[in-house]
Length: 368
Image (tube, rainbow, N blue to C red; front, top):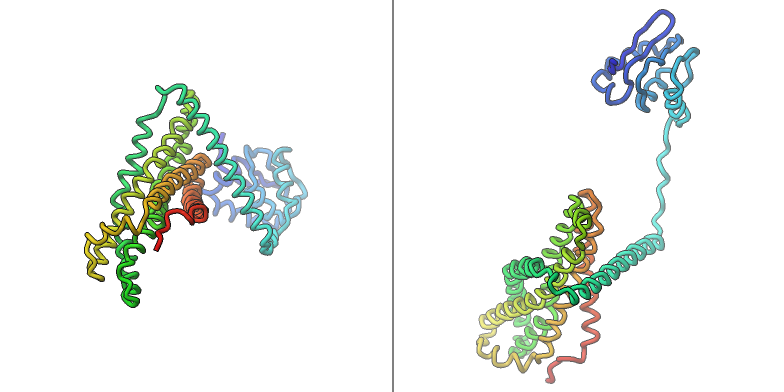
């Protein structure tokens, strides 16, 4: 059967044959339009009974040639007539949808519903993790040690250089700016208190959390998302392997274990940077710092900082895995969920930090 769309003018009628579809017409579109335009003013009978296929694009083309009116004589199959009838009832011009006004309540309600859906998903994932931990407690041979240590290496060891660099620069900046103010009041010695409390208790954990959320959190979401796109997760389910036990649990436990170590490392490097800046600006020796730091910063502050690290690591990994499992099998969903994971993780970290600050406001503050 010849599928090329063709048009023949015979005595008393116009005969169309072949496939009149957009794909088939495109190579001959200019020629067909010219032939149809030449027949625009004719009122002869049209024979479409030889058409093998007719789609909406060809129906629109014919309807316009017929000047939006049925020709006096038309031979056509019932199925093809239905296609032209659907085109015939369409309006000549489709009005643009009316622009909706901005409604604050609708926007807030939509955001709250999305937050509630995500919160429910995270709680469900957390509950599944508890079930997995109970299973591993009864079956210790199934503990995924290899995946767990691999995640500690990726999220912890490989992040040491970048966190050290950023921590060192932050320490130098805080020390330099504080030294300028303390010099004016003759309170140079309090640089130890400012650096110690701010870095060990607050800046160290938050700084590491933001860096890890952008680096490791996005990587976790992207990795799980790619496994969703390539159907690897479905393959695991087909083989009877738990996706949370083998994929999610090692990531969450790995980052939860690595975060306090990163906080300790980054705080130490930031303090070292602050000490060097204080040595250059205020001529305070490193020995003075090491001698007075335990007095200015009680041990409780270090424990609070490490506790924040543990909680931040758990929150970041939970959020990243949740959005990774929400990825649909297309690249747009992958990028959107990766962005949402980073933004949500950083927001959740700041929220948890604020709650932590309120609950521990009376703990670890030095007595002047």
